[in-house]
Length: 332
Image 1 (spheres, rainbow, N blue to C red):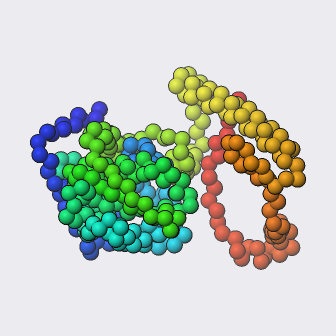
Image 2 (cartoon, helix red, strand yellow):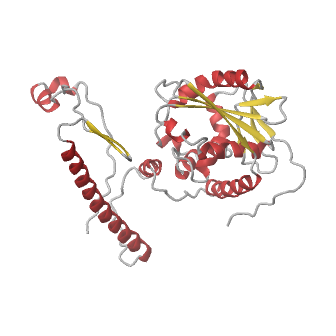
């Protein structure tokens, strides 16, 4: 059972500085983050992060992240690398456009009442009565879709978490989209949302403190975590013939799989009918969108089967071990 939260009506207390980060290594900073829920964790903690599930965040907070693929912060092909590199430039442009001076807060902040509630602030806005926090973001071609209608929900939750920890009134979110489009959004403090966010985050933190994994959510992140948590089987076959819940779950799975197969077949039919109408045309303009059917450029590929047959010693020099993974099969 989740411990009820007491919301005080007294004057808000400022955030505590848990750890100074001036000389903190990345490894030590990550260890500090495991002691609570940071602002960038907020959306995942309540199940609303499109990139990370509750289960994945739980694995990180409970020290099980070694089983998960790690992102190299120095890998310049990742959004994390460019987001970190361009943060200073986004902050500088924000100052130029808004006239607001900003400065770094070289510390991990902690909520004065909920010790598990942490925050790293990109920049503090100086001397403004209207806004006190600046959150800097970058969005590439894929991420830009989430910014089409304004600040994505997971970023809004991140900012409300920051406002909750710091007791501040508002934050600006400055984002560089696709490397050449600057936008800035104002997010005002929402006390009702912050109260609900704290309640939901407290529920997640109980999963961490009690070492109980949260439920899966159907995401790719959850699938990755299941493979990491249970990489191999032990050979046992469970007898669940009298397990009502398990049998209901299996029945539902089979029903949805059948519906998906029917839907996929219908989708394929519609696709073929559209292709038939196009004929030799490259595409068509429609009232609800566009379609195209273009030939790709010719290319070449290596016949590895023939190469292995004729030059087995050469191929063996470049072979690397590949761990097996568990396959989920259904027999009805």
